[in-house]
Image 1 (tube, rainbow, N blue to C red):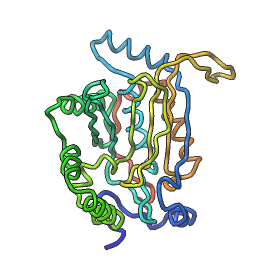
Image 2: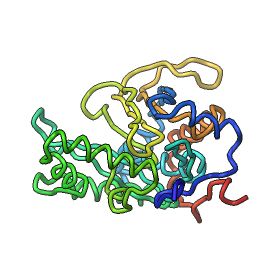
Image 3: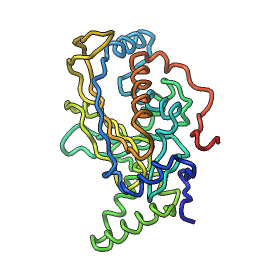
Length: 287
């Protein structure tokens, strides 16, 4: 039946604007909005250094991951997606990322998707993140995404075009098998890429028209920048966080307020040490 999906529940009572917009902006490439912010990292660095003295090894990526997982739970409208003219509330919280198995031109790249329930504390997020990265760093390891891509790559181009078109049709109509959705990095709450790890500043990464990704975060390299705090401009050591989002899922106020909460967690990582009691439901699902 059209409208039913294994990865989300269709929202029937969204405001009129959000019923019409997906009909006008049919693809994510039509509805992308861009935002970037310099994030002062002195508080993060101090926190990481203090935890290192306790024997706990953390990175900026760990803290950003944990902060994004937290706002996806606390701000559940961010975890919506638009497809085929409909808005859905996603059933799970997941974050995808691409990793290089070795930092060389020839190094293989693989894409991972990590599932969270949204109640995790910083240390639990760290453990999940590094466990899956460690498992996939080995050149001999092929995850479900790698195996599916390798299989499809062997199909002759004319047949592959038809196959990809059929897969997109299944996705648009809600009939894509759950097994494919589970291994697809394109069916995820958010993508995070740490381009700072390869020495460049943040980028605006496009949202994929295939799948359901509504948000993409790119983390840039460390640099000096000027930030406005306490009614004055200060030079700080920063990273730039660039964001691309699908404006069909929520309004600008909701995005902006969510970013303020995200920055609060980045400036006070200790708030992420305590997990949440429960996953917060989309407000449309509790009416």
